[in-house]
Length: 295
Image 1 (tube, rainbow, N blue to C red):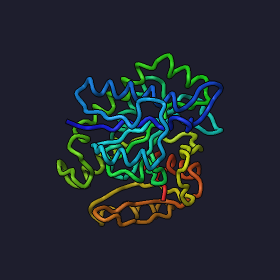
Image 2: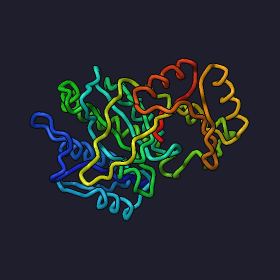
Image 3: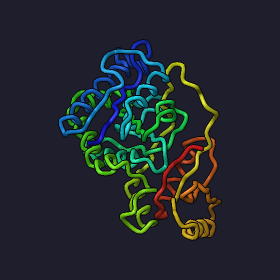
Image 4: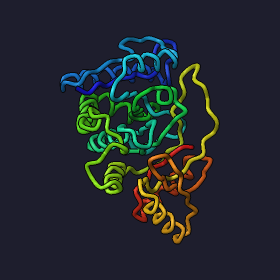
């Protein structure tokens, strides 16, 4: 039986974003509890980091997650920032290039698209304590912009459907989660064919995305990021080299990064996410399966 750690971000004196009389900590708790309850009805073991309006320091939160252990940690947030997208949005953060959370994100995004949510994409983040300091795959879900009356109304009016969509996205990834499957362990297909199939799940578009998930109180703030676009992840070096050569012929400056068991083909070095997202869109038009990453 898979075990999911459900995390409602913020809590207590850490309110998160405040919009009018709406507190992010209240939204995240309500969503996390409902999603967890729906998962338990499907036979999945669920543990909550908090079930009441309780304050946890980042260390207390991650220590609890590690002590409980699980196959996947799912943290619920709202999208924040000054820029409000023109449509209801959802975004995702994971803690590994090969994390099962990437597959879960893709499946959740497909479900939420039926409810008019536009998917802003997935990015690997290692600056967030809740992803960096846990000993398991992690996924942060940003559901709707809290400063958007439209997004708030959508969450309130279609709350049960949103909970069902997230739950179904997790259930659809159940085999990967329960088995703890990563790309390194997936031997069901030819090595690079398996990677290509997995990246197919990552066919996620990036839209106007210029806000950061806010760090909680007492969270360490890391060094500024450099953003790149990953266009391939291969076990065989020659396959990575073929993609590199094709990109070079198309006028892109690319590099191969040795990640141990894999070779990552990456393009660009951008100081802002917006610049990398523009390149990502162009590469996707050319037919590449892309993933936005932060270095």
